[in-house]
Amino acid sequence: MKSKLFVNKVNKYAKIDPRLYGSFVEHMGRAVYSGIYQPGHPSANEQGFRKDVMALVQELNVPIVRYPGGNFLSGYNWEDGIGPVENRPKRLDLAWKTLETNEVGLHEFSEWAEQVGSEINMAVNLGTRGIDAARNLVEYCNFEGGTYWSDLRKTNGREEPFAIKTWCLGNEMDGPWQIGHKTADEYGRLAEETAKAMKLVDDSIELVLCGSSNSHMPTFGEWELTVLDHAYEQIDYLSLHQYYGNHTNDLKHYLARSLDMDEFISGVVAICDAIKAKKHSKKTINLSFDEWNIWYHSNEQDKAVKPWQVAPPILEDVYNFEDTLLLGCLLITLLKHADRVKIACLAQLVNVIAPIMTNPEGEAWRQTIFYPFAQVSNYARGEVIRPVIESESYATSDFEEVPYLESIAVVNEELNELVVFAVNRGEEAMTFDIQLEGFEVKGIREFTHLTGHGIKETNTENNEIVKPVISEAIELNEELAIAKLEPLSWNVIRFAL
Image (cartoon, rainbow, N blue to C red; front, side, top):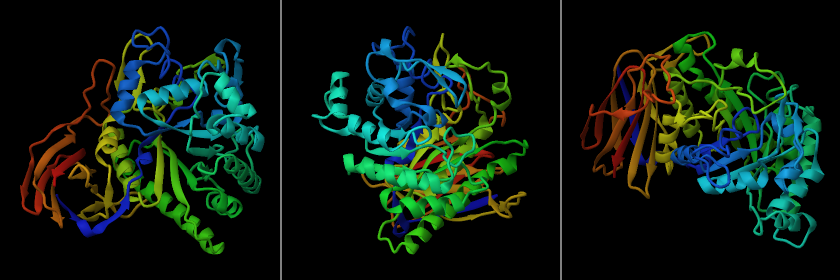
């Protein structure tokens, strides 16, 4: 099988916002307790944070983390997580039917985020709460001092403001499962007025409006049109959420799910621009894909989890090799839309549908999906080059043409590097021609591939077998590179410029 990618310097079209490589930590399952935080663990630092987890988060190079939810958010009182830990209330978390101790709150999570080098994408509760709690939280976090909430922050040990820039206006408010679920008109009006109040406290913040919980919601499209009609001039981003799974155990169909993500993004962009035109606005709304991942492995086992425990093991998907290939395709899709998708959050970061897993009595380790995310986060910095691809294709029940090759190129002028990411969806080897035009290519820095595993093969605490290795199957002849892409493979080629 043959394929070709044309990489022309004049086709640079989008500067990548580093927040595209964000993640998500919700107070659910073992994401926080025995995930990022476990006092008494051999790796814990003096604040109780697991240093083995922190090292892996830094390896992923995650610039922003959405917090504290998620469905948890819509019943959460942020004041429960400040002040002396021994005085904090224990609460019922109705979203996941667990007990929340509030041992970790805003100050602790901010300390953790600073230690791993991430910013916080803070979310405000618009389920059971509203304008007043949201504006107070902005004042507590971002106001210099001399007011009730800012001085309370200082009393609680934080002299300088947290200076949180990015804020989510609720979570999945279109979902009937959401505590405080609202109609589009109800949410649109509340979000508009909450946004106004928050920006009166700090006009430098950026706000994310809730879009649909997924593209298959019966209200999808109409929801976006309505909430944007209310809040367009007050907000900066519209959110998207989507999860994928191989429910039919059909590999070709599964690896084509990134085309669904592509259509979802394009549809939401069109809606945003329609409202822009309707309002004769000069403002462009970009997108925050602040929940995306693969989620289906744990569905059955979660049914047996008893309610009202502290940090029970829920949504602990164990990812396999085929999940890695799809995740690579999803990452490439996000890069293709980097002109409008400025924030994205892999949901989640630790233990809960996550690239990092922990053993409370043992080590932290990398799941199979850890590797493509880490490589894209670290190497896809700079500008995206519009892909022009030649590839054979196949058909699924959803799509008539699914290219066997999924690929994108990114140029990093600061590092004098051009990086090509490619997935071979096919079950036979592929000759991959990369036509390099307008670049002075000095050589190949590295070619790695992740391939050769059974599609259901997984990593474990003591055996991280599914991971990239070096390939020598590439030749460079001036402006043409020819690589061999193994069957069912994730590939990263780094050229020196």
